Length: 194
Image (cartoon, rainbow, N blue to C red):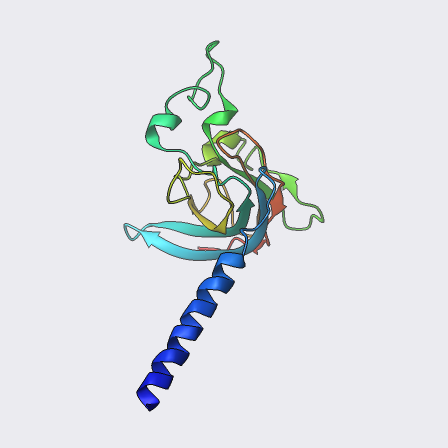
């Protein structure tokens, strides 16, 4: 008798859970991706016993209404995402993760876009852009998607950052429909001496 009550209670809980689960509707996010800064971590490594490299990992949270985030290899090499436009110019839709560098030199009060190093080496922003793969499990089915995206970049000491510079980044992502997210600013860190 007790076993029958337990089974009946378990069945009732199972049916109730199924009914509640079927009432939950998916989140309603806009089709344009939205991002928020979550974390920045920096770890120093010595490569080949000589070169100091700062491994920077930026984590952002994302939400997208139709889940069309990420590119696969076939998409990445074909229009509208191919590296060069038909006129030979750089196609900014080739990347879907835009990672822009900002520095505040010692003694300065404002962060500035980092385009030229102290040794007058010109930096190209696209050298720091990236791509991420499809994030949804079934790319054929449009559905809301949210989660975290982590990007790791390695920066050798002195290329492009120098000890004492305070560094931060601005991040933007793009979906396959070429909708551009908001831009977020990371926290900052000071480049340590060797």
